[in-house]
Image (cartoon, rainbow, N blue to C red; front, side, top):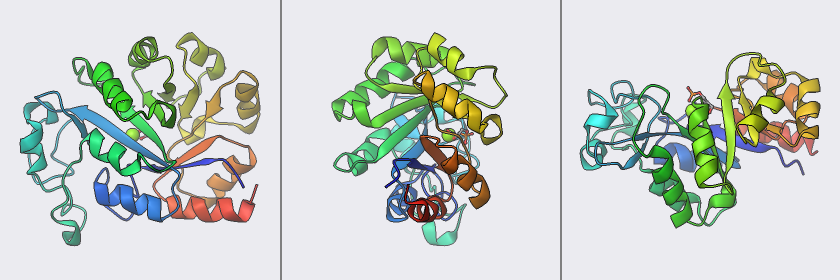
Length: 245
Ligand code: G3P
Ligand code: MG
């Protein structure tokens, strides 16, 4: 069987409201072996799983995540914007996701959303939470903020990190080594098969995002990426079964 990690992007976000517990549970039902999620920080330092810096798009509230306490944020409805039947879903804490997956084998990709707002001690808090669950070997921390990934590595060398990027970086495996990263979380257009081989030879793996088209998935499976981040874990699960590699 293939070991390619099937990362559900924000949970099963094609069929559920993104970054909610229902989306994470659905992802596991659909065959995801990994879950990608985004973490921001509330006013009281609690870690909240939400993609945007503001609650406007994915809840019935208004304003910045950083201006809400976690208790206040949990009162918001994070489901009905997607579909009325999901009314009552709330924004989860990082703990809730780790609790859901602790006794499974799921790999969790925690994306630090500190490109726009520099949350104080975000790295320390995320790492302390991971350690409190003893899940260090099941996590990949990623970010577009590579300074933050260097900081994570210095605090927790045992936790894998992945650099997020959009562009055609030259020899990204060499760059990854300069920030002590383990994985390349490249935009799907910034991946060519020959680079995957070369990265692997340098001890660095590819986890491209966000790959929703079956033909693109096939191309990356054949090229032997280590993981694929997708809104459609069911689609990828199906292909990986056919592939049987
Ligand atoms: O981690 C992959 C992907 O989630 C990065 O972009 O904006 O969807 O968080 P975004
Ligand atoms: Mg993300």
